[in-house]
Each structure stands twice: as structure tokens, then as C-alpha cells.
Image (cartoon, rainbow, N blue to C red; front, side, top):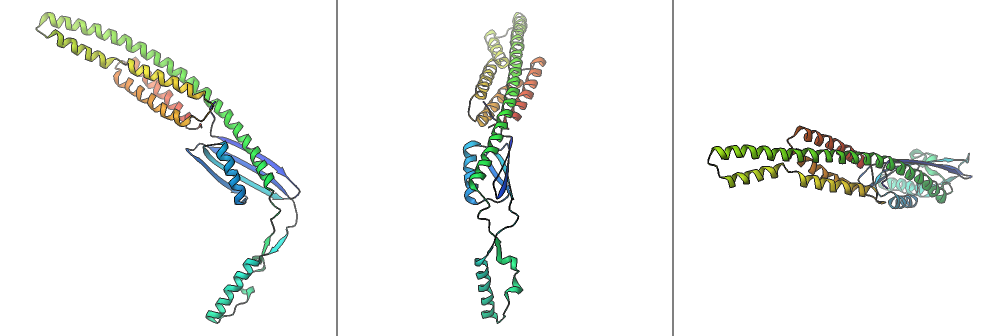
Length: 286
């Protein structure tokens, strides 16, 4: 069954230190694109999340918002030794090279030398668990919307088949009527003048061939059948269906150019409209 690329999921959790909330949104995209917002996780955790997404979603523009709220009222502070030593080295170089002595307090504030001890802030296991729950919600929403898209496309395929059947009947009647009309006119011409009968028969065959749209209709029916089959596959088919829709569009355009009857032309216009609506829906499926 097809799946949509549009979805949303949200999950919460907490421990003694923190409250966690993760939201995941996805929309259609040719590739898998992921953007993190909110709290900046460690690179190793982000990489694990990316790996999960690659295995689960395949395509889509995905935004992940991570919010972490501390339950502890007071935060533990640490002395930023690396920063202190780096600044001291710079001040020493200034004195050696320029003879200018600067006090540390003139350059930075106390806050610059202190950092929050967040070593216990993030529980990787909880973060990944919350993420997976949000992801499951998103996938469920993708499946629900995928079913809605499937139902809509199936109905439009039924409309296409009805229109194609009408076109087949219209063009068959027109072809028969055209042949009868041509034969009558040619018989009159042959009776009244010296015309090469064999050459006339060739011309009739040529005109009849130009008016015959049997091949286009057969190919169109075949492509539409393939389209229905693709929709029932339990795998990503969006790109293959896009190609198939291009082929159906080509056959319908040829039908339009070869059909001079107003009724057939009207059916072709209607088929193009339905095909465009299917194409719009397909842009949002895997």
C-alpha cells in the first residue's frame, strides 16, 4: 500500500533531571532531507537518529524539534580551564610582543570562565526512545494519508477507464462513417472521371490509418493497468508511477491530435484533467 510523505509525530518523557519532548514533521521531497531544531544534541545521538530515519522513511523533508527542560532548580558549574589557559597565553603574547600588560578582568568576565556541567543532562536512551515513539506516530499518519491518496487515485483511474472506453466507441464509429463516406465520394469520382483506382485505394488506406487510434488506446489501457498494479505494491513506487504518468500523458496527447471529432476531443480534455490531478497526488507519495 502506498504511503504519503506528509506526517507529524510528537512524544514526551521525563526523568529526575529533565523533561523531553520531540516533534517530527515531514513533507514531500525527492530525497531524504533532515533538519534539527531546538536543543542541540551530541553529534553521536544525531547520527543515530539520522540512521533510524534512513531505514524508516527513505524520502521526505523532515524537521525534528527537540525540547529539553531541566527539572533541577540549580545547575552545576565547572571551571573552563581550556578557555582560561588560552586567554592567558594570548595576554602573555601581547605583553612580550607589544609591552602592553592587560589584566584578565579587563578582557573577560567571570561568566566566560564558567560553564554549565551538562554531563548528566541528556540520557541518550530516553532521547532515542522518545524519538522512536514520535516517529511511529509520523509513520502512522503517513499510512493514513497514503490510504486517502490511494482511494482518490483509484477513483480517478476508474474515471480514466470510462473516458477511454467512450473515446474508443466514438473513434470507432467515426472511422467507420469516414470510410463509408470516402467510398461513396470515390465511387462517384471514378464513375465520372479517369482516376487511378489503385492510387485512390492507397490514399484511402493512408487516411484511415491516420484516423485510427487503436494502438494509442491499447497502450493507454496497458499503462493504466500498470498504474493500478503499482498502487497495490507494498514498496515505494512514487518515482516509477511518475514515469508511467508521463507515458499515459503522451498517449492521451496523441489521441487528441489524431481525433478530430468534438466528442472525442472533449473526452481527451477530461482525461488530461484527471491525469493532472493524479500527478499532483503522486508527488506526495513514497
